[in-house]
Length: 300
Image (spheres, one colour):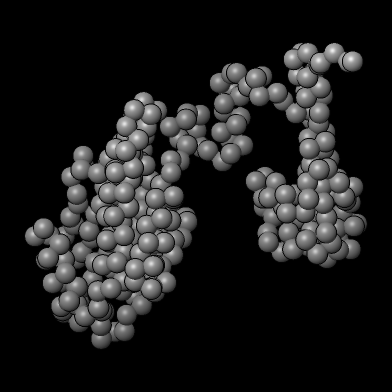
């Protein structure tokens, strides 16, 4: 009977494996998912070629530029893929060898996190937003969807909104604020709301847009994932919730000691977002109706 392998020998065996050893076991979809995580600037049209030719991990490692171009891929992406294949010879690192701040910096950069601190990692804002949209769509039967990193330009500012929720037009802008300085998030969100407001107005007919009774409003959210600030933007002024009113404690101790409170706070935030979405897609387009709606909200 053979003796069991020692932990040291197992570690040595793992550390001698190379990335191609892992890649060669990928099926086509696993390969495409793997390539999608790399910063190769590949498009869906390039992945379609890999699917059409049934390229698995093993055959991927043997690709050449000539083969890829014969399959219908342009020279640029073909070169990128072949150079990527040639760079795959490095050994896999054992998880336990990742111990330094440089290792952390490398892993953050590899996963598209700007900066060198874990506070720069995005929290689970999208999960809450997607859940809210799903509920609102079910309740209203309206086509509501989220757009990531949307470019919005106005008269005084231009740039990307972290998340935009829209139906026929933009009606909710979400900005991810930094825990250390939420005020910057407010400034950015207000500028984004102003630009979105102007964009929406341009879509109106001349009679609507330049009517002296014209009125519209948008919602904004500034969030760190733990703090949630809600804003109403109108031509008559802006309104916001209390800074400490909507918070989700995401510390390990809070999650472990009081998971019910976490669920309650998440449910509360989702309820607010669903309410905003329902309101914005349900209110009719008449300025008087929108003005009356805002007056009602402000009085609450």
